[in-house]
Image (cartoon, rainbow, N blue to C red):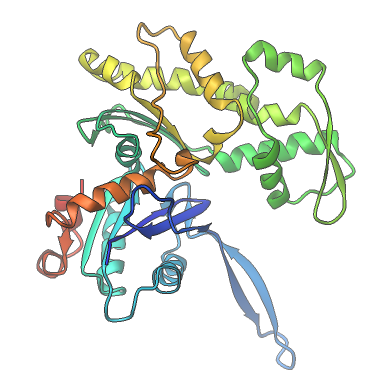
Length: 361
């Protein structure tokens, strides 16, 4: 049985067996629904449905919920059998706390009784997915943005940057903008998320964005409850916020400037190798016009070496940017498990959870 690869994001969990040239078998929402039994009315108990987010801003925050989610993914989704559990590789977000890594490996060996474990950083895996071991990964996730220089398969943590905003903040921003132009409508955040995925796009440059504020075609969109919403210039605000974070009220540079500033903290001998092998991933980066805008902003960069995006190989699955870390994990799993570079049950029994820091890096 192939090793399982799990990439638990803040919005979507990607999971499947390690077959690199195929999309993950499961791409499901990470958020779960938990039923709470209201026993205040003894004769007629009411079940309340509450949303639970096991992963927040990239990190696992609710371990009980994460255990339930993984149980469903591994046994129901991937068909593992109780008592015959296999090997598993997890993707790690940038700067994962040591305690989180130890808790994950403990959960997998003591609760799921796996035979082997490995974890690797998402920035490295996203580069593996496009056939690189050195470069810079810009990961625009649901709850965070990570910019990480990677040299010979190792993240330069000193130079790396993590920003505590991502796709969910862009969704909230879009909700505010739609509320201004549709003041009489009540739009749920889940509907706004779907509108963002369907309509959001990037203007060609800052001047083109400014023109959309004066004149922009308006489309109508019917919500599930029958309400009709008008969408005009708002579709451009999401993409623009990545290049002008001041729109979100943030005192920060745009994403290309942040990339160049990150690389400037690395030895100049590596600048060309990193900037000319830039990988942008995450669901938000797949919006219409983003790649073209990124390249245009790169051409205007003050850096002597312009950032250049790496194109994924043709044999890789479509929409690779959405699950590139998972694909990289599938590639790595084909190496670490056959070559016994992973954490075994014997390793764990002998050393405990701290073994993860020695064998997974």
